[in-house]
Length: 229
Image 1: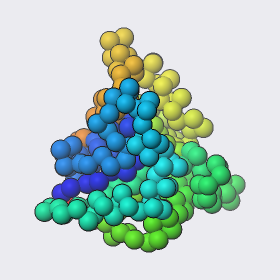
Image 2: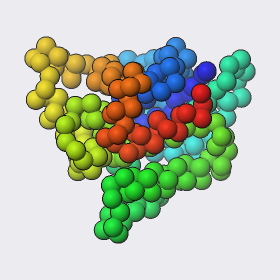
Image 3: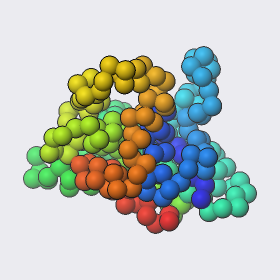
């Protein structure tokens, strides 16, 4: 199985890579990092075009223009292939994102709120794609961000981790509290290596199944991958 990964950032690539290992036993060697381009160092990044570095706006543009996604599927691939498109919802309020947010005061619990918001984002991505390749795409929609997914490994709270106002800050606080002094060196590592280490527990399916009970959007993404077995 070959997977083409289109994501907002390098940390997202790392987290999703570990999830693919835990759900489908897909190795990193079988994953093509289409967006952002992974094989660049920080010096290269400073002179790279936006479409090489990625962001939610670049993911949107790549979907709308479709050349990069079409090229992935058009290349002769002997094995079965699918793509993963990732978006966080933290930027949903920004101009151009264009996704309707469910009303939090409408009596929705956090799980239903996550399900509805995820559906709205998936529909928006399909609109950008003009409904192409839908049967070959898995949607990694992180509410609020993939830091909320990683947080499931380190947070002992009972709430869905996407319910925190700032999951990235919450994750940082928990890591500074939990990690041993030598382990904290990973927090200064390059982004991919940092998030690969922080999310390595996702590589084991039983761990991933447990952690996904603590975040509805993580659970929905894992479940959506089952069709690609």
